[in-house]
Length: 313
Ligand SMILES: [Zn+2]
View (cartoon, rainbow, N blue to C red):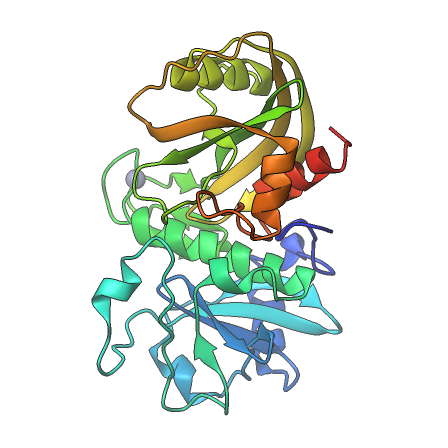
Protein backbone atom coordinates (compact mmCIF):
# COMPACT_ATOMS: atom_id res chain seq x y z
CA UNK A 1 0.00 0.00 0.00
CA UNK A 2 1.40 3.35 -0.98
CA UNK A 3 -0.57 5.50 1.46
CA UNK A 4 -1.14 5.31 5.20
CA UNK A 5 -4.20 3.87 6.97
CA UNK A 6 -5.08 1.88 3.84
CA UNK A 7 -4.65 -1.55 5.48
CA UNK A 8 -6.48 -3.42 8.16
CA UNK A 9 -5.07 -5.33 11.11
CA UNK A 10 -5.89 -9.02 11.61
CA UNK A 11 -9.39 -8.76 13.15
CA UNK A 12 -11.58 -6.04 14.61
CA UNK A 13 -13.47 -8.77 16.50
CA UNK A 14 -16.58 -6.56 16.75
CA UNK A 15 -18.78 -9.28 18.26
CA UNK A 16 -16.75 -9.25 21.49
CA UNK A 17 -16.93 -5.49 22.08
CA UNK A 18 -19.84 -5.82 24.53
CA UNK A 19 -18.83 -9.21 25.93
CA UNK A 20 -17.50 -8.29 29.41
CA UNK A 21 -16.44 -11.86 30.26
CA UNK A 22 -14.21 -12.16 27.18
CA UNK A 23 -12.85 -8.61 27.55
CA UNK A 24 -11.91 -9.17 31.22
CA UNK A 25 -10.20 -12.44 30.29
CA UNK A 26 -8.27 -10.72 27.46
CA UNK A 27 -7.21 -7.84 29.72
CA UNK A 28 -5.87 -10.31 32.28
CA UNK A 29 -3.71 -12.11 29.70
CA UNK A 30 0.02 -11.44 29.83
CA UNK A 31 0.45 -11.09 26.06
CA UNK A 32 -2.32 -8.49 25.66
CA UNK A 33 -0.94 -5.25 24.20
CA UNK A 34 -2.21 -1.79 25.06
CA UNK A 35 -1.49 1.35 23.07
CA UNK A 36 -1.45 4.52 25.18
CA UNK A 37 -2.51 7.76 23.45
CA UNK A 38 -2.01 11.20 24.86
CA UNK A 39 -4.18 14.01 23.39
CA UNK A 40 -4.41 12.21 20.05
CA UNK A 41 -0.71 11.31 19.90
CA UNK A 42 0.11 7.59 19.88
CA UNK A 43 2.93 6.15 21.96
CA UNK A 44 5.81 5.34 19.58
CA UNK A 45 9.03 3.37 19.81
CA UNK A 46 11.62 2.35 17.18
CA UNK A 47 9.41 2.91 14.14
CA UNK A 48 6.55 0.96 15.73
CA UNK A 49 3.71 1.74 18.09
CA UNK A 50 4.84 1.77 21.73
CA UNK A 51 2.62 -0.97 23.12
CA UNK A 52 2.68 -1.65 26.87
CA UNK A 53 1.36 -4.47 29.06
CA UNK A 54 -1.82 -4.11 31.10
CA UNK A 55 0.06 -3.52 34.38
CA UNK A 56 2.21 -0.64 33.09
CA UNK A 57 2.25 2.38 35.47
CA UNK A 58 1.44 4.76 32.58
CA UNK A 59 -2.05 3.26 32.47
CA UNK A 60 -2.95 4.43 36.00
CA UNK A 61 -4.16 7.68 34.42
CA UNK A 62 -6.13 5.98 31.63
CA UNK A 63 -9.83 6.67 31.07
CA UNK A 64 -12.04 3.62 31.45
CA UNK A 65 -13.01 1.47 29.72
CA UNK A 66 -10.13 0.83 27.33
CA UNK A 67 -10.93 0.81 23.62
CA UNK A 68 -10.97 -2.77 22.32
CA UNK A 69 -9.33 -2.78 18.87
CA UNK A 70 -9.46 -6.56 18.33
CA UNK A 71 -6.67 -9.02 17.55
CA UNK A 72 -3.40 -8.55 15.74
CA UNK A 73 -0.31 -10.72 15.36
CA UNK A 74 -1.57 -13.31 17.82
CA UNK A 75 -2.59 -11.03 20.69
CA UNK A 76 -5.50 -8.90 21.84
CA UNK A 77 -5.06 -5.15 21.27
CA UNK A 78 -6.55 -2.29 23.27
CA UNK A 79 -5.93 1.46 23.33
CA UNK A 80 -5.97 3.65 26.43
CA UNK A 81 -6.45 7.41 26.58
CA UNK A 82 -4.11 9.00 29.14
CA UNK A 83 -4.80 12.61 28.14
CA UNK A 84 -5.18 13.71 31.78
CA UNK A 85 -1.42 13.28 32.23
CA UNK A 86 0.31 16.68 32.51
CA UNK A 87 3.89 16.44 31.23
CA UNK A 88 6.53 18.72 32.77
CA UNK A 89 7.52 21.78 30.71
CA UNK A 90 4.81 21.27 28.11
CA UNK A 91 5.24 23.35 24.93
CA UNK A 92 1.63 24.40 24.28
CA UNK A 93 2.52 26.45 21.19
CA UNK A 94 3.95 23.34 19.48
CA UNK A 95 0.81 21.34 20.29
CA UNK A 96 -1.36 23.91 18.52
CA UNK A 97 0.71 23.93 15.29
CA UNK A 98 -0.60 22.42 12.02
CA UNK A 99 2.13 19.81 12.39
CA UNK A 100 3.12 19.30 16.00
CA UNK A 101 6.79 18.30 16.00
CA UNK A 102 7.08 18.16 19.80
CA UNK A 103 7.33 14.84 21.63
CA UNK A 104 6.34 13.95 25.19
CA UNK A 105 8.16 11.32 27.22
CA UNK A 106 6.32 9.71 30.10
CA UNK A 107 8.59 9.15 33.14
CA UNK A 108 7.68 5.45 33.24
CA UNK A 109 8.07 4.90 29.47
CA UNK A 110 10.47 2.28 28.13
CA UNK A 111 13.75 3.53 26.63
CA UNK A 112 13.28 5.49 23.35
CA UNK A 113 9.48 5.61 23.63
CA UNK A 114 7.53 8.85 23.33
CA UNK A 115 4.19 10.37 22.34
CA UNK A 116 4.42 11.83 18.82
CA UNK A 117 2.21 13.31 16.13
CA UNK A 118 0.62 10.58 13.96
CA UNK A 119 0.89 12.78 10.83
CA UNK A 120 4.67 12.60 11.17
CA UNK A 121 4.82 8.91 12.12
CA UNK A 122 2.16 7.53 9.76
CA UNK A 123 4.48 6.83 6.86
CA UNK A 124 7.11 5.11 9.05
CA UNK A 125 4.76 2.75 10.86
CA UNK A 126 3.95 -0.71 9.48
CA UNK A 127 0.57 -0.33 7.69
CA UNK A 128 -1.49 -2.34 10.18
CA UNK A 129 -0.03 -0.39 13.12
CA UNK A 130 -0.78 2.92 11.39
CA UNK A 131 -4.39 1.77 10.97
CA UNK A 132 -4.65 0.76 14.64
CA UNK A 133 -3.34 4.16 15.76
CA UNK A 134 -5.64 6.01 13.33
CA UNK A 135 -8.67 4.15 14.66
CA UNK A 136 -7.79 4.85 18.29
CA UNK A 137 -7.07 8.51 17.54
CA UNK A 138 -10.39 9.01 15.73
CA UNK A 139 -12.43 7.25 18.43
CA UNK A 140 -10.81 9.07 21.36
CA UNK A 141 -11.38 12.38 19.62
CA UNK A 142 -15.04 11.46 19.11
CA UNK A 143 -15.48 10.66 22.82
CA UNK A 144 -13.77 13.92 23.77
CA UNK A 145 -16.15 15.98 21.64
CA UNK A 146 -19.41 14.01 22.06
CA UNK A 147 -19.88 13.73 25.80
CA UNK A 148 -23.55 14.69 25.81
CA UNK A 149 -26.62 12.97 24.41
CA UNK A 150 -27.81 14.65 21.20
CA UNK A 151 -31.40 13.54 21.96
CA UNK A 152 -31.84 14.84 25.54
CA UNK A 153 -28.65 16.69 26.55
CA UNK A 154 -27.73 14.38 29.46
CA UNK A 155 -24.09 13.31 29.73
CA UNK A 156 -23.59 9.94 28.01
CA UNK A 157 -21.35 6.97 28.86
CA UNK A 158 -18.78 5.07 26.83
CA UNK A 159 -20.14 1.63 25.90
CA UNK A 160 -19.24 -1.36 23.67
CA UNK A 161 -15.61 -0.94 24.80
CA UNK A 162 -15.29 2.44 23.13
CA UNK A 163 -17.32 1.90 19.95
CA UNK A 164 -20.59 3.49 21.17
CA UNK A 165 -21.95 5.99 23.66
CA UNK A 166 -25.10 5.26 25.62
CA UNK A 167 -27.35 7.82 27.30
CA UNK A 168 -28.35 6.68 30.81
CA UNK A 169 -31.29 9.15 30.89
CA UNK A 170 -33.17 8.36 27.67
CA UNK A 171 -31.45 5.18 26.44
CA UNK A 172 -30.33 6.65 23.10
CA UNK A 173 -27.29 5.02 21.53
CA UNK A 174 -24.74 7.13 19.67
CA UNK A 175 -22.25 5.83 17.14
CA UNK A 176 -18.82 7.18 16.14
CA UNK A 177 -18.86 9.90 13.57
CA UNK A 178 -16.97 9.71 10.26
CA UNK A 179 -17.06 12.73 7.95
CA UNK A 180 -16.90 11.92 4.22
CA UNK A 181 -14.57 14.15 2.21
CA UNK A 182 -13.77 14.20 -1.50
CA UNK A 183 -10.20 14.94 -2.55
CA UNK A 184 -9.66 15.41 -6.25
CA UNK A 185 -6.98 15.34 -8.84
CA UNK A 186 -8.17 18.02 -11.25
CA UNK A 187 -6.37 17.93 -14.58
CA UNK A 188 -6.36 19.72 -17.91
CA UNK A 189 -4.21 18.07 -20.56
CA UNK A 190 -0.70 17.88 -19.13
CA UNK A 191 -1.48 20.16 -16.17
CA UNK A 192 -2.60 19.44 -12.60
CA UNK A 193 -4.43 21.86 -10.34
CA UNK A 194 -2.96 22.20 -6.86
CA UNK A 195 -4.05 24.60 -4.16
CA UNK A 196 -3.32 25.64 -0.61
CA UNK A 197 -5.55 26.63 2.30
CA UNK A 198 -4.93 29.46 4.73
CA UNK A 199 -2.71 28.38 7.62
CA UNK A 200 -0.94 25.54 5.80
CA UNK A 201 2.84 25.20 6.14
CA UNK A 202 4.61 27.52 3.74
CA UNK A 203 4.94 26.32 0.11
CA UNK A 204 2.69 23.29 0.71
CA UNK A 205 0.34 22.64 -2.22
CA UNK A 206 -2.03 19.71 -2.52
CA UNK A 207 -5.14 18.38 -4.23
CA UNK A 208 -8.38 20.29 -3.60
CA UNK A 209 -10.74 18.72 -1.06
CA UNK A 210 -14.09 19.33 0.58
CA UNK A 211 -16.81 17.71 2.69
CA UNK A 212 -19.58 15.74 1.02
CA UNK A 213 -22.95 17.26 1.97
CA UNK A 214 -26.05 15.30 3.00
CA UNK A 215 -27.97 14.02 -0.02
CA UNK A 216 -25.00 14.39 -2.33
CA UNK A 217 -23.10 11.76 -4.33
CA UNK A 218 -19.33 11.67 -4.28
CA UNK A 219 -19.26 12.77 -7.93
CA UNK A 220 -21.64 15.67 -7.29
CA UNK A 221 -19.50 16.79 -4.35
CA UNK A 222 -16.39 16.81 -6.57
CA UNK A 223 -18.14 18.92 -9.20
CA UNK A 224 -19.58 21.33 -6.63
CA UNK A 225 -16.33 21.81 -4.67
CA UNK A 226 -14.32 22.39 -7.85
CA UNK A 227 -16.89 24.92 -9.09
CA UNK A 228 -17.18 26.73 -5.72
CA UNK A 229 -13.46 26.93 -5.03
CA UNK A 230 -12.13 27.63 -8.52
CA UNK A 231 -14.99 28.32 -10.95
CA UNK A 232 -13.92 25.35 -13.08
CA UNK A 233 -16.35 22.82 -14.59
CA UNK A 234 -15.26 19.27 -13.68
CA UNK A 235 -16.11 16.35 -15.97
CA UNK A 236 -15.21 12.64 -16.22
CA UNK A 237 -15.22 12.25 -12.44
CA UNK A 238 -13.83 8.86 -11.37
CA UNK A 239 -13.19 7.22 -8.02
CA UNK A 240 -9.56 6.15 -7.39
CA UNK A 241 -9.15 5.04 -3.74
CA UNK A 242 -10.17 5.95 -0.17
CA UNK A 243 -8.23 6.74 2.98
CA UNK A 244 -9.36 7.11 6.60
CA UNK A 245 -7.92 10.43 7.79
CA UNK A 246 -8.11 10.71 11.59
CA UNK A 247 -7.38 14.49 11.77
CA UNK A 248 -9.88 14.37 13.30
CA UNK A 249 -12.59 12.10 11.81
CA UNK A 250 -12.59 12.05 8.02
CA UNK A 251 -12.80 9.42 5.32
CA UNK A 252 -11.22 10.75 2.13
CA UNK A 253 -12.58 9.61 -1.23
CA UNK A 254 -9.89 10.17 -3.84
CA UNK A 255 -11.25 11.05 -7.30
CA UNK A 256 -9.97 12.33 -10.59
CA UNK A 257 -11.69 14.94 -12.75
CA UNK A 258 -10.93 16.67 -16.04
CA UNK A 259 -11.68 20.31 -16.80
CA UNK A 260 -12.38 21.84 -20.20
CA UNK A 261 -11.67 25.37 -18.97
CA UNK A 262 -8.58 26.61 -17.09
CA UNK A 263 -9.37 30.14 -15.91
CA UNK A 264 -9.43 30.20 -12.09
CA UNK A 265 -11.78 32.29 -9.94
CA UNK A 266 -10.71 31.46 -6.38
CA UNK A 267 -13.08 31.71 -3.41
CA UNK A 268 -12.08 32.66 0.15
CA UNK A 269 -11.37 29.08 1.24
CA UNK A 270 -8.20 28.89 -0.83
CA UNK A 271 -5.16 31.05 -0.29
CA UNK A 272 -3.88 30.07 -3.73
CA UNK A 273 -4.39 27.55 -6.53
CA UNK A 274 -2.37 27.11 -9.70
CA UNK A 275 -1.96 24.82 -12.67
CA UNK A 276 1.32 22.93 -12.65
CA UNK A 277 2.78 20.99 -15.58
CA UNK A 278 3.90 17.38 -15.10
CA UNK A 279 7.51 18.56 -15.33
CA UNK A 280 6.98 21.17 -12.60
CA UNK A 281 5.38 18.63 -10.27
CA UNK A 282 8.25 16.18 -10.94
CA UNK A 283 10.74 18.91 -10.10
CA UNK A 284 8.97 19.62 -6.81
CA UNK A 285 9.06 15.90 -5.95
CA UNK A 286 12.78 15.91 -6.66
CA UNK A 287 13.18 18.86 -4.26
CA UNK A 288 14.27 21.14 -7.09
CA UNK A 289 11.70 23.91 -6.60
CA UNK A 290 11.69 26.65 -4.02
CA UNK A 291 8.05 27.68 -4.57
CA UNK A 292 6.17 24.42 -3.89
CA UNK A 293 6.60 21.51 -1.54
CA UNK A 294 5.02 18.14 -2.48
CA UNK A 295 2.02 16.70 -0.57
CA UNK A 296 2.98 14.76 2.54
CA UNK A 297 4.16 11.16 1.99
CA UNK A 298 1.54 8.71 3.22
CA UNK A 299 -1.37 10.97 2.27
CA UNK A 300 -3.81 9.93 -0.45
CA UNK A 301 -2.99 13.20 -2.23
CA UNK A 302 0.65 12.12 -2.51
CA UNK A 303 -0.46 8.68 -3.76
CA UNK A 304 -2.82 10.08 -6.41
CA UNK A 305 -0.34 12.68 -7.64
CA UNK A 306 2.25 9.90 -7.93
CA UNK A 307 -0.18 7.85 -10.04
CA UNK A 308 -0.80 10.86 -12.26
CA UNK A 309 2.95 11.45 -12.65
CA UNK A 310 3.30 7.81 -13.68
CA UNK A 311 0.56 8.20 -16.29
CA UNK A 312 -1.93 5.97 -14.44
CA UNK A 313 -4.72 8.54 -13.99
ZN1 LIG B 1 -30.39 11.04 26.21
